[in-house]
Length: 552
Image 1: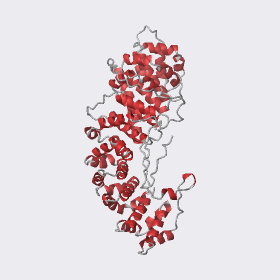
Image 2 (image 1 turned 180 degrees about the horizontal axis):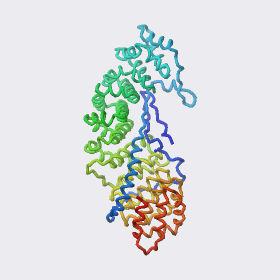
Image 3 (image 1 turned 180 degrees about the vertical axis):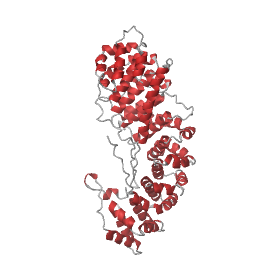
Image 4 (image 1 turned 90 degrees about the horizontal axis):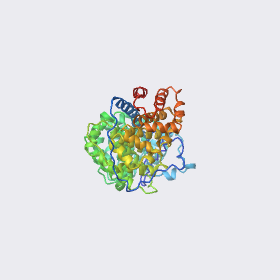
């Protein structure tokens, strides 16, 4: 999915930290939202349910449906594989030491090898200046070159470990901060130099100091990102059982840090075979689901982290049956309904950060072939989606894309196609058509989902102002969007010939003619031109075989 929005970096360990947003690389429209684009308010009385006749039968329609599902599967795969991995830095003096112009962080200059050696000797000495030397070392380790020089010195990491495991609390915390600075390095060699400290980090996760436990968690999470060797060492050291014990902590800061570590582990390339099975054998999944679903009560930061953890597990294709057996689908559906019902006109800051992974979890659970007969048939879910769209469209347009992905997967079922029409949500959906390229693709795909259900559904689409909006879509330069629009027209003309006649009256013939010279579109455009050239009284199915070949 332009670049992802800036990721919020945690501030001090003693103050609330904004949750970073993990979205696809291009979650936002190419330009600002179009002026005046607003969604319809949803009256509380919209609870009627109307079901229509059977969907389109026949081999040709099945082939069309299969091809579109293949394309959607490819899009979903690309979407799942775009996962952002980042590191986080906890500094208790962020405000004081990052006071550069325009909020730029002040970085120390690199030290020479002799200067680094002098600092190390000061740390190793038993003098009263040891704590001051340790503080100077922590500041110096913010520089990448200094980090590399430090880890190359013999005994450097061993010295830090000695102070990290000492009985002097102030020395222990300062050494932990030095190790944390090293964990933030982008050099894998620095991360691997910290291998000897991993067992101690795990041990101290059961400590009594929240600040110290939190610092150990984020240091572990940073090391996990950079080095496969670190991950391979942590697994036999028992990181999963330790995290399973920590997840029952009552402290939100600890839970949020734990979620960060777990999310980094779950994004590793070896996660599906080596990490997720261990997670599933622990108590982590049920506690993750509990914390996500109690997010607004227990703390949104931890809920966001564990929602992304669930998302990464679902994307692994290895654990969905287990999650479904825990009631993930109804639990996340209920959470989304609760979130939508509590959205005021001015949504609380950060709520979209929780909604985004929850939408993805639901969407991907519905998209997977799990073999479980689990269905959601609650039209309130549609109302919730459109309330979320209405709330976040202007300030957080990436949410539009996530909502449409879920709506696309829901409208694979007759129930939600019927509910969308009976609740009169189609006008609101059509307003999203010009929002962005990806939104256009998804809206058109959703409309295809509805149209393929048969004549009664196509009649409803025809009665709404769909055709006038499709004409500008045909003029877009994106062949993928235009191609999806042609598929929708094909289904409408096939099931409801009156739509073809209206299309011609609105200038559709000229709109199709311009694509006769476009290689990837010309065959489908000519097939539709053949259809609209038929007299209205002729059978709408007479050129069916030609159309099917053009759209296959």
